[in-house]
Amino acid sequence: MKTVDTLISDIYTMLETKEFDDGVDKEEICSRFGDVCADLLREQLSNQDSVGRLRLSGFGKPNRQIYNSYHGVVGEPINGPTYIKFIYGHLTEAVVLALTELAGHTVTDQQKKVQVEGINGHIDGYIDGVLMDVKSCSSFGFKKFRNNTLHEDDPFGYIGQLRAYAHAERQHTYGWLAFDKQNGTLAWLQYDETKDNTPYKKAIDWSVTERAHEIKKLVGGPLPTVCYEEVPDGKSGNMQLATGCRWCAYKDTCWPELRVYKYSNGPRYLTKVVKEPRVAGGIPSDF
Image (cartoon, rainbow, N blue to C red):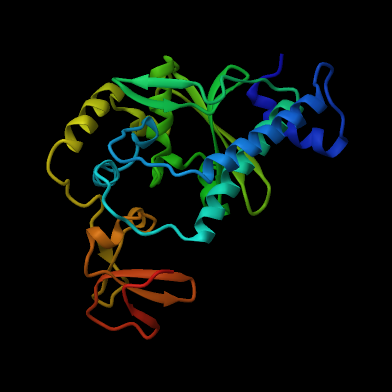
């Protein structure tokens, strides 16, 4: 019986040698993969309304973002290229799970419905009996999984999401199977809540049940404060959005005076302009 300890090397070896373990039904896995891709595309082409709904996937997100989503606050419209990135991300995650099975590892309980205090969610499943979540990432984001530094910077709330699933499933060990979309590399990052003195101990030292009660209470109350305070933009005196706000669809709602400038390394969102940047922009803009 294989374990997740050899998962990455087994996938690479299978692809390089085109050799399969006894009992691996290549044709059945490939056929099922095609069905999964079709279902994913259908789902992405349907209208998905999250107004008035709480999800376990949001447990790690900041309070104001949860509040805005629940109450249907209008955020940045999602453009075509962004939708394509979403679809591509879901499809690559399906590829990784198919490769996992082709490499002789077991994948079970995919999209199983779970619940915490009445809040629903769906897990990605288990690999070799370990609760897991699959994440497709940029090369920058991938380093957090490869180097075990996710606990130092988790702006998308991946830890809170998987901890909620683990609580629902009564699991103390869980992990992420990460895929670098740019380079094709894979990484497995596993947490064990029973171990002390781990680098991620502080990041998981909170109650999932209490968080569920907090979320229910906050969506019925007043608008929470901004999720992240603005930060200095160098020594110019200008202030810019924190990293956690840059990728949020509600940044214009939370920061109505926001100005966007086109720098060579991408857009920069300034909340306060003391010294006008010598680049294009300066007005609310859609990048």
